[in-house]
Length: 71
Image 1 (spheres, rainbow, N blue to C red):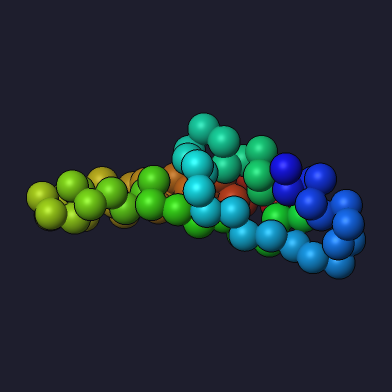
Image 2: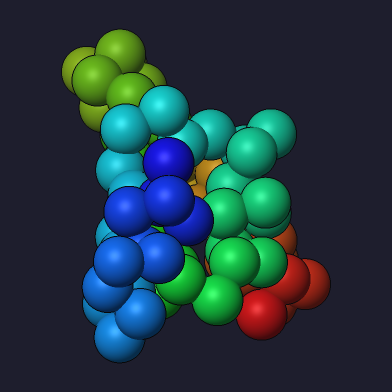
């Protein structure tokens, strides 16, 4: 969908947020139309409520590694 919409706006880059997760973020990042991705997949409410900040830190570090590998 991003490529279809972007075809009419060649100078626009996108920041998808819905439906992004560790399994598909790399595919988004490989697109020249994407400048960043966002979403709650790394910082889930239950992890915050339970104080599981090490897990959040590890998920964020994993996401940063995915970015390095795909940019």
